[in-house]
Image (cartoon, rainbow, N blue to C red):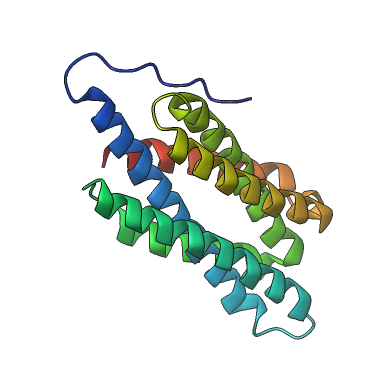
Length: 187
C-alpha cells in the first residue's frame, strides 16, 4: 500500500517547508539504516560461519552510506537542518541491528525486510509528490528506492520470513519505522 502524496500546503513558503520535511526524514532514515547494518555486523562479524551474511550487510551498508552522503549534501545545499533526534536514531538503529543479529541471521534479514518494506512505501509517496515540482530529486529517490527494494528482496531470499517470531518481529519494526518517520519530519 503506497502512501498518498501529501497535497501542497497553501501559503508562502509551504512547498519549501514540505521539502525540508522530506529531506530531513530521508536523511534520518538513511542514518538509522547505516547504524542498523553496523549493529548487525558488530554481532555477526564476530561469530563463526557468518562471513557471507556479514559481506551482504557490509554491501548494503555501503549503499545506505551513499544515500546518507547525498542527503547530507542536500541538507547543506537546501539549508535544511537534520532531525534533532539524529543521536537517538544512531543508537536506536545500532541497537535494533545488534538485537536482531543476536537472534540470528534470519532475524537480521527480517529486520531488513521490515524496514525496507516501510521505506519503499515511504519513498513511493515522496516520488509521486515530487515528480512534477522536483523531478531531479524524484529521480534520485527512485534510484534509492530501487536499491532499498533490492535489499528487501535479498532479505526475503535469505529467509527473513522464517525468523523466529517473524510476524510479531516484523510488525514491531514496521510500526517503529512509521513512528520514526512521522517524528523525524517535524523534529
